[in-house]
Image (cartoon, rainbow, N blue to C red):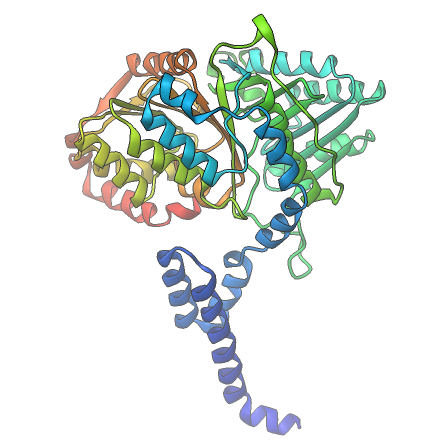
Length: 484
């Protein structure tokens, strides 16, 4: 038997290799919706059947999708019924904002799990010092439950401060749950998850599964969401992780900038639905949906219409991408974008440049110095695609700004956790707020305008005048941008 194997092992290996490669290539071709992704994986597998199939098994198969869909399916009808009680009538949108935003609202109803609702209040928190203070104060007022989900929750001074408020809330009988991404939890040592567990609090990691006996997270599929829901009253979401680098208290004048939001009204229940499903996915515990409503009478906001938009590599794949495509398509006068990582795919670039050619003023604001050097090189290498078609790009010096802000025509805003890069638009689990409100859009635009006032406009000549080797390096890194 061993002699036969030793004589024929090359043929056995070849047969197994070709069989495994054929199965992997067929799976990629049948399951990938993006022709570039399908072509790329099939090419890798065919060029190296065994090794390529192994890489495809680890990084190419979406193991989350089926589990997440099963998690969502049982509760979806309840969530939609709750939202519909506060849903905004499309005629209201047409009368107040015009048919372009009515069309965008129909798109949102089709793409997302939640309706745009009225009776919401959204407060902008412009610094980490303000955001963490408001969060800790809200935690101290909790009467029933607190659930927190974050990509990064560092075990530093500010992280332990927030953790202390959570632990004191639990000590007085509040149900407290904390969910941190498995990759993000490793940003600090020791992990805040271990810190909280050692003190008796329910803390979980998202997607920290076992692969072939190794403790490896599916590093490409992360929860990038930042959500805190307290009772049925208030929620916090936005771009801000929990770490001392965002506070002047600990980082001084080197504190990174970001924008976070405190919300009340029906969207609180929708945010809870998102984080509750992630908690169920990570822990197996099913939470009862909370019921939230906006203030009545004279206390109700005049026109804060908002919708929760959740997206990720499950049933809501590319929802944020499709919402942005729709928004760029209906823009008539302006598109204002602030993003730390601007690496849109070809479809979004085409939508932006087509809008610019229609006469829409497009301003894109990014940091002068990025915290991720490879991303910065790839981003710079892509600027020519928008500059040569009439868009305006601004680089802002000073401390790094992590904000994700976008407005259309001074009426529609899109804020939250999504960056304009392949990771946020295809790989990460993200959550954003679609807000239709003139005053709120004006507030967001004032933040963008303040950055532009301190920025420098990038000209097409600035890119072409760079040394050839630097431009070549940028283009090579840009080729790998889906995995940065």
